[in-house]
Amino acid sequence: MSNKRTEISELGEFGLIDHLNSQVRIKNTSTIKGIGDDAAVIEAGDHVKVVTTDLLLEGVHFDLSYAPLTHVGFKAVAVNVSDVAAMNAIPKQITVSIALSNRFSVEAVDALYEGINAACEHYGVDLVGGDTTASRGGLIISVTAIGEAKKEQLSYRSGAKVNDILCVTGDLGAALVGLQILEREKQVYLANPDMKPDLEKYTVVTSRQLKPDARMDIIHELRDLGVVPTSMMDVSDGLASEIFHICKASQVGATIYEDKLPIDKQTFDTAVELNLDPITCVLNGGEDYELLFTIDQKDFAKLEKHPDIHFIGHITKPEEGKYLVTKSGTAVQLKAQGWKHF
Image (cartoon, rainbow, N blue to C red):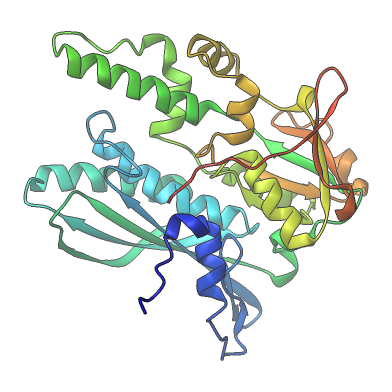
């Protein structure tokens, strides 16, 4: 009798994480939160440490035919800082491990680290270690970020309450649309290397894909305003997918409104040009690295006039499900079709 083989694609990324997590046993009382949020949380005296790690692979997460190595280095740090921000914590240190094939020169590594060091400067973090090794394929980068906060300042995915307001920073869908433009121009170039890429009018969307910026500015502003989100995560796999995560962790439902979803004009126009539905890009496009969070209604007045925080909906009872109310007033069941890793 043959052993049953289960394809990873049957589980998907989050199913695989749940499957692996079911076999993990926490042994130390200092481990406050393990797998299942944007970062792990570890007791550290009068405060807590948050720890997160991300892996970026050439050909999966970035394409060096259009992504400059300096941008790749910056992005590798930014995506980890974004996970620290998603816990409402402040990043302090990072480690960086890289695997390189022999096609990379010392100058190429310098360019990569120019971006890493620029991100460290930008976010006020220290690069404190890592590892280097050989790769038989392309470039692999693994960054671990360590942040800190007071215990009462932390925002988990699991704290959303019925009637909380759903908020999102910035605008959404740009990174996905930017990726489509970069891929299109790459195909044009491959078909005819004499053709110069036409990227002049797409600077907003392409830069959001190539060099995203973690929203630490918002975290500092929330501190200044005395607002602790009841739940929070960053938008890395798509808005709908992240709403599902918060609803699952908090055991709640959610209603969002199409006319409240923030989208940049260039993102909207470029999506239409590419025959993509702009709202689908907002809901399912990943890698925006904006912050999705919930606040208690009593905190609304503190954030009401913030130019870069948008109130897109509210938290409902779990039995009320997850819905998008369209501009015409129709409630459509929300589907999470974010980035699929497997």
